[in-house]
Amino acid sequence: MNLDSLNNQPRLLLKAALRPVLGTRFQPTGFPDLGAATFDGPGGEKMLLVESAQSMANRLERVCWDDTANDWVAPLKGLPAVKVVDKSSAPLTNSVLEAHRLNSPYILEGKDRSFFDALRRELDIPELGAVNLRKLAAALLKYDINALLHGVFLAKKEIAGGRMRLPRALTAFIEAAGVSTVASGGVKNDAINPSGDTAKGFGNVPFHREEFTGTITAFFNLDLALIRGFGLGGKVEALLIAMALFKIQRFLRHGLRLRTACDLDLRDGLLTERPAGFAVPPLEDLETALPALIATALGEARDRFTTVVFEG
Image 1 (tube, rainbow, N blue to C red):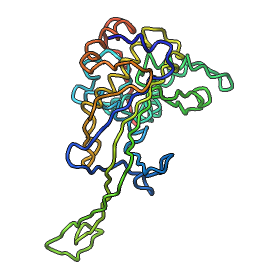
Image 2: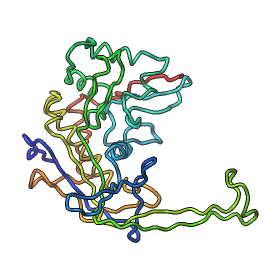
Image 3: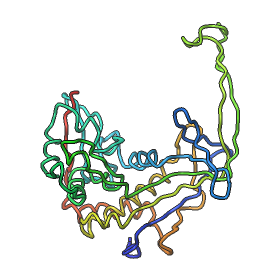
Image 4: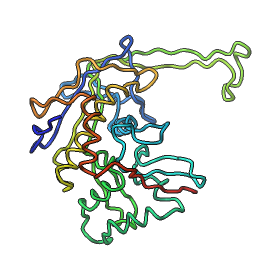
């Protein structure tokens, strides 16, 4: 696996054409009080946000975790993360799956303050001092490497006055172009009492449904300049790039069933927009290369989990 063509490049931009696995209709993400996010493109073309950047971050993280084993999937074993358990040591959650990663209340707001205090000591930045993001990056490499790719905001005044934040190095979203609305609906039938109290679940309940057709594309932006700016060295940079590519390829292989009515397929493979000529390694090559990259960047294989007990 050769990543040399990414040296000195500021961004890696990728895209992938998608299509429904059956038929032509699909259901986009919806937002409270808004519904589907439709908009006009620069040329007036009807566009639709199928999956937002925040949702895609969650999906790219999800394909990295084995729920049954409560561990990273095999190629990523040995990476650091924070696990949260209850007082009986049963697993509750972890920093890979929490929406705000290390800033999860289950990690920083419980009675167990051991990790919070250790993190505050390691960052060691006064409330009025300049924020040193390289110090934050070094702490994330030790405790939650996933946040180096997906960003984190430690919104705690006890930690540098709540100013410790790192933007996403890996950003993704899915859009559809040339969209048309497919309006439909149905009714929940109650054969026993059609006019029953619907507030209690009885009675016939008609509903409307809105789906879409259009040309669907997934976009991925890996900020290589930001990764180099962490100052963690070439071995860690190679690991982070390989991790990002693994997340993308695994999502495109295993993560495209976004919703019941939004089950997608990859059409023509993953294409590179920039830099020209870079070919993304296939998933199998990334799976083979990652264990050695982890060992080179972080040392010999071992459990690098930090455990926090959450009791409320």
